[in-house]
Amino acid sequence: MKFADAWPRRFRPDVSLLSVAILIAVAPALLGGTRYAYDMAVVAMVYGMFAVSWDLACGTTGELSFGHSFFVGTAGFTAAIVISRFDVPPWAALLIGAGAGALAGLVIGLLTLRHTGPVFTLVTMAAQLTLYRTVFVWGSLFGGEEGIPVRAQWLDEPRSRWFVVAVISFASVVGARYLLRSSFGLRLKASGGDRRVGQSAGVDVDVTRVKGFTISGFVAGLAGSILVLHNAIANYELTGDQLSGMIFLLSLVGGMGTLVGPWIAAFLCMTLLRELLYAAGQWQSVISMLVVFVLLWLMPKGVMPEIAKRLRWRPRLAGSRPS
Amino acid sequence: MDLALLILIRASTYALVAVGFALVFGSCRVLNLTHGFYVMLGAYATHFFAAGLARLGVSVLREPLAVLCAAIATGLFGWLFFKLMQVTRRTAPGELLALSVAANLLGAQTFQILFGTAGLNVAPILQGRMVLGHVTLAANDLLLPPCALVAVGALPLWLQRTRSGMALRAVADDADAAELMGIRSPEVLARAVGIAAVLAGLAGGLTAPTQTLNPNMWIHPLLVSFAVVVLGGRGRIWGSIFTAFLIAFAEVTVAWVWNETAAGYAVPMLVLIGLLVRPGGIAQGMAHEIR
Image 1: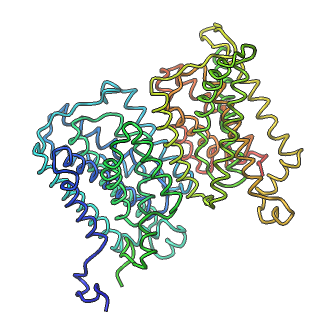
Image 2: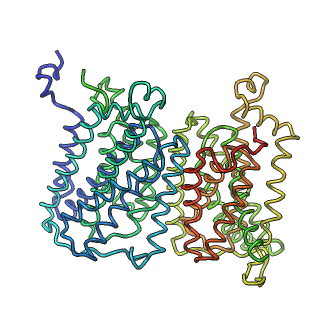
Image 3: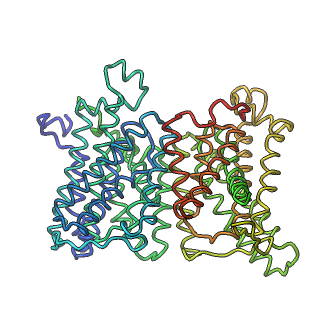
């Protein structure tokens, strides 16, 4: 009898979710327990949310989006603007930012309804580039080079901030998995395949796709607003091809469509890899990108599916119902 | 008249960049997104070769020679990269797309550290500026239309008249049948990628003097060539050239009416709106496919 079978089905330990929880719990202590460690863990968990949200929209539909920073940027700048111009309290700004992200997701979902494959990638790339240019063209509103400084009292104690972000980030992973296992998740998967097959099964492909992108935009927007509040600044790094590329690549490295894989890949890249490469100084970003390149090259399907294959372990991946 | 010249110069740059991308996409149905990086590589390599030739004491024709060397080096790099992907069997569309995005970012970050973000300047082939009506042109830019005309014009000739061009068309039509006839399709595709990279490198080298080189310069050419291929109908040479002119026209007009920074909106907007209205591309139905 396997270990897992000893448990009642509803309470079986879920290895992949458990590993996320353990990573969240031990990371600050392993990184040294200082303020710096907590800050690093917060950023890493935010990147985990970015990857999860990318995977929600793209892992299910099978499209490769190169414009995820459009959601992040829209939400982050909205949050920064409502705080700096209208003195909105930070928690409300967080929600407004997430709402803006959802709106951005809705727009992208509507714009790309008819597009698949390379055309989809092109349109998302164009969308994030539009936002990137806007930051500089409307410098008076978006702060241009310097960005918008955000002065808000938001959980100034590093430990409480880490705890809140940990709860939000973990909840987004659990929520995303729950969503993809629900009947909505199955419909979302169907909308990514042949659209005629989906339609013949009674799925309203267009509506499902747009909904999927809206939810993905909400998660990315929430994460982006957290990042703005955490860094106390919103600048051009919230959008543009560097962030889009990072989200895209980390999700693929983790394993497209597995949800937990992208989260772990992003988290480890922002914590473990950064710490390991600390001595590399300015070459840090180059070496970590090289690591990403080599991993993608060796395991085109992603690290998590590869490990699962080697261990003959069938993790309960998103979208597959436990049997 | 002066605006028409500006549009012509810009369009020939874009045609030079994009026609290779269209060639590769048309022949192997694979998006090699490293194309933007090749333009950047061509520009930086021109800087590198110009400095090297100066150190060797070459003074006659130093700049043209540097551009030529840079284009060839870029072509070799592109060929090698694609060959590597082929040997390791990473040429499925999704895999190559992901790997080429990673290669782009890797290259951009390496250049950022090696040369900094401040920007480098490259000596032009033709010195001086000329004033024409309302606009001032760098004389070096006048080299672009003839170069583009020769390079882009030679491409259909190569495809139609030579054995290797016909082999590429055969592979594009039906790779299996081409293999049966004794054509080694991987070799042919790698050659096409190499040629595309040479053209991109040439464009990078020729435009290098009129812009400051910075490690983010890959994204614009990539977006332009991507847009040209998709808007111009997948893999069609004449559609690509038409779209290159359309994009140049849009950019110059926006820059004229508004300002140069806002001209950056032109391509993304053209992509978003153009594909919304005509998902199959603007130049849908134009004849003369590559294949």
